[in-house]
Image 1 (spheres, rainbow, N blue to C red):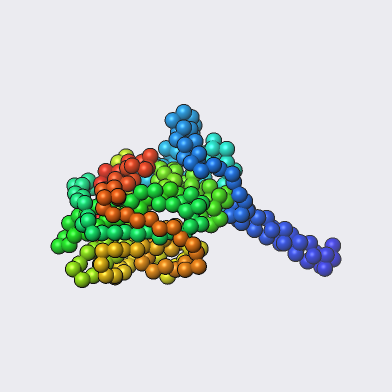
Image 2 (image 1 turned 135 degrees about the vertical axis):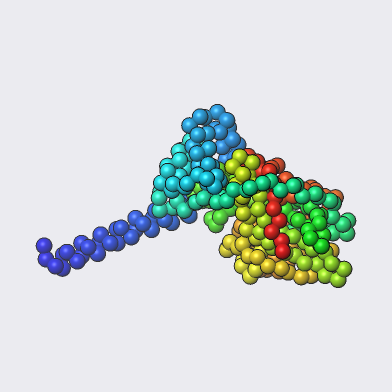
Length: 309
């Protein structure tokens, strides 16, 4: 074979391999999967109750992901995940797309006493403004929890917002459906739950985006929950920014700025049509992030740890 022919064949091989890799990586992000809203969680729960192989795969995965004393084996995790997908009649995932890992690394030495919630001041009005397109995709606000509690020398309102779902771009793509299945395993829910804090002062109001931790019932693992500020990011992005914003008064407007439902008092999507939800202490459910998780998740939690300074 001449050198010229060899180089041509080599070039064609490189192009073919590049096309295969491109297809394997991007196809899940573009391919649409027809899964009716609400049916994935119900099918998952029914299979968990009735199918021993499915339940065993889910339990083994949860142990690897959520038990700090259990090592994480990525190859085994992918095999178990594909068993779950197959039982749900969904396409399997390739190693190229599998980037999920361990969520819990530390075990609690004790369970903290439960934080006591009071009803926030009646003059509090919270408006949550969400892009209409996100709501129409089935990701609207389902419920809001408020907990007025003493933290150090201050009184703090912990606000937990429950969204019906969380869709990666592109909604209903294979990548998005895989993400939902993984959340059903690792979080025990498809609902997206996010938490921030309001600190009321006589002259100013502070909105704080801080992380927290909750303790799993079965493994006593400490699950860290990232802060959910959006900063300058907009709807095409995801964000978990820590920070503080300041405003005046007790009428508070919070914008949902990113697809993973990160918040700010500033709207970073001014060209998007919005839906406005309004909550007062009488309309919200009185409770902690801990209560929201136990209400919506198949997993159960024993305690909550505030990480506010």
